[in-house]
Image (tube, rainbow, N blue to C red):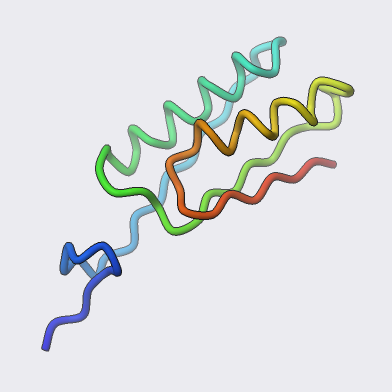
Length: 83
């Protein structure tokens, strides 16, 4: 029996991607970082989990953009955090 992912791919190798941005507009920064992370893991079935960290320097723009993150991050579950 071969171990595999829940998506039925049969792959047992974990996929991991990381992206970051220093764009001054938070929505632009989020889109840039997500694009880099997705490129690192490749298109295809969604990840099991996505974690988004946003710097507190973005202030009041954080809350609405965290909601946008749920739409942009191709993952079954998305965790958004800030500090």
